[in-house]
Image (cartoon, rainbow, N blue to C red):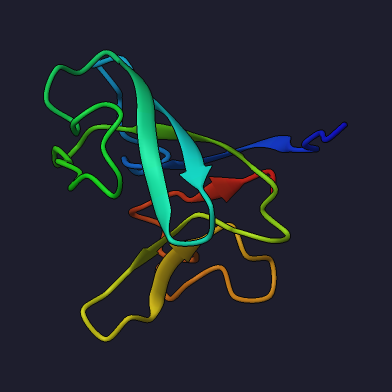
Length: 113
């Protein structure tokens, strides 16, 4: 018998705290495929975020929109991260290094990881 233990971890990025949001939050649910890939399994409030059920699909972000990313993984083992071209985290669920943009007020990053 085998089983998986996972937690649902959420983080938000998008508009400034004081920006009036007129568009609904885009909600994306991801699953990890081992240690090398992520898959988008559902998207709400957007029809062009990324390709469903494709490993490491490119994401399309819209300036001024707020995003809720739901990661169905054990973030202690495989945290979800956005990385820059130098492969450094800019936003991460890793509590030891949440990324270079985690404290940027214009992004308003929140994580429950």
